[in-house]
Length: 392
Figure 1 (cartoon, rainbow, N blue to C red):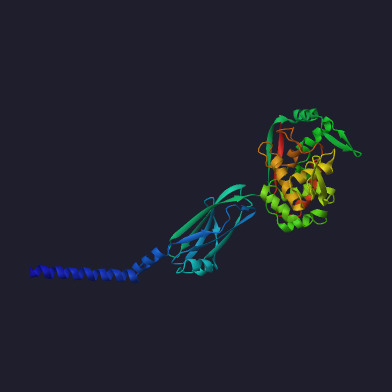
Figure 2 (figure 1 turned 90 degrees about the vertical axis):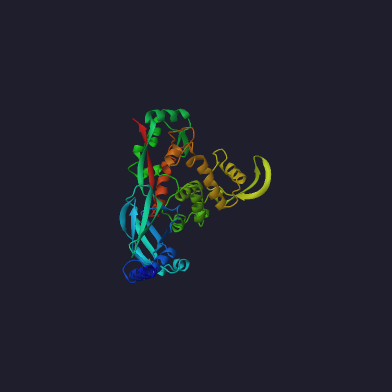
């Protein structure tokens, strides 16, 4: 028994001695120590992106974020649609991150930034992946989808020939042109000229085909410059921008439309009209505004336009700008049925010729010079053109 106890004691001593040696090796060697393993449990690798999910990127996309690794960060790689794009700048001050997650090496400078050139990417969604590699070799990744929108031109095919389209338009009997101050009925040749996209795609007339959805790449300063010397429209750029964002319509188009309809903010409806009766019935007298000429029909434009404004509560210029934008969008630009989201389609609507904004054959073309002049004041505006193409 004594020999067995002595042997067991020796074996126990040896085992403990070996464990001590192994522990020391872990502590002083190049591998992770027991203490470090505990630290890693408390300090896992982290990564985050500071990107607005609703943001649309034009020309470039700036990718911001932060990342942490207990051993410190060696590098941060950026991938676009699973293809390596470059290494991000790392070491940007992020004391907020260090305060939220203390104990990481380099936590106070855990921010990163990278600029992706999106000008050569197709319009639509793309996947951005960020991979942070720690000094210990461990990596941590995060991905997000971004929407890219750049200048582009595409064609929309219609199932009707131009000749048949002209015949239908002529048969309406309400296609007009102005001659020496008087309105006259247009003939087929005139209709064919103004409705044929090929007559305008190589000049400023191309702006008839500009998509009128919200224009990205513009600023409030850009809009201010477009409203200089525009009468009562001046100083209302913020309302145009609000209307554009709220209803997904180009603020530049809204401004062009209002300038055209109000004579650069000088019309009676732009300056304000007192309304005392609506549909022949007395109402509380109020001053109303109508900056897009909505419902200002030729038979009595001031009265009808003012009464329409009263019914819709347009008692300030801003209310007229924003409320009128809603009317235009609902009935034309964002209408799922009519889908008239270009000047051309608002005037010439191949899908439904009975739903048109104006009878003047030159209505769309007459607006392009003004629209282009406004756009030229916005160098970063993103322009999307949709060219109609009739059946051969």
